[in-house]
Image (tube, rainbow, N blue to C red; front, side, top):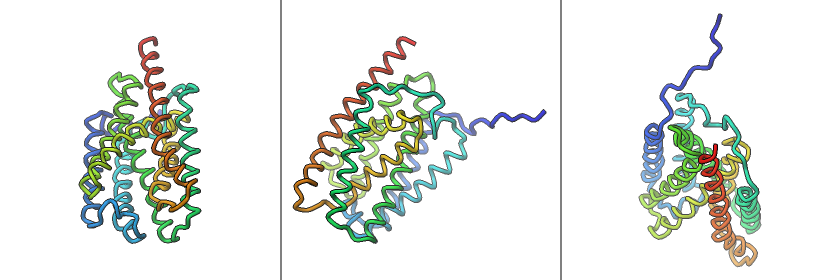
Length: 261
């Protein structure tokens, strides 16, 4: 009789393996961006800059991560084996995130963007959505869920790791003060992106949300538009606030479940 069981992983899921993938990704992506000679603050000044710096590095990063994901045969990367409950408070951050990001996207597009730059920015958003979600809410989250670690701590450490990853932007010309703010914002946003995955159990959900977020971030600011400026204020204050509230709710719920199985 033929054995129809799927083959096991080529390397066991572990934080060490995930760290190795993370280091390889950071070195590859930041290396390409550094070699491009374009400062981080000018990545999206022109379409040419975007393709040479952000898009070239993200394309290479996506290839690396997809290759590992399929080679390693880790389960639980693309979808959760079992559903994780979403309480009402947990839904607040994803819902507000979508509303604010779509508003921000519409207002920035209304100011007019050169088509070549818009296409380059869309490509970058897709690249970030695939690469960073596959790395963090895919490979790293799967590794953190190992060894009996509770979902609460897996979510928290995954989000902190995601935030600290943005510290590497200082090596490609981003101002240190801006980088510090990015790390804090990314940590809290990581909780919201985790909740996107949790809401449906699919990694793709977070990829789409992350892609929209970064497209709206990379687009040039809408000048002299009070509505757009209001949307920007909402992005910098409302998104972190609701992300923190929903993230704490998820952490407390999962801690309670772990203590009272």
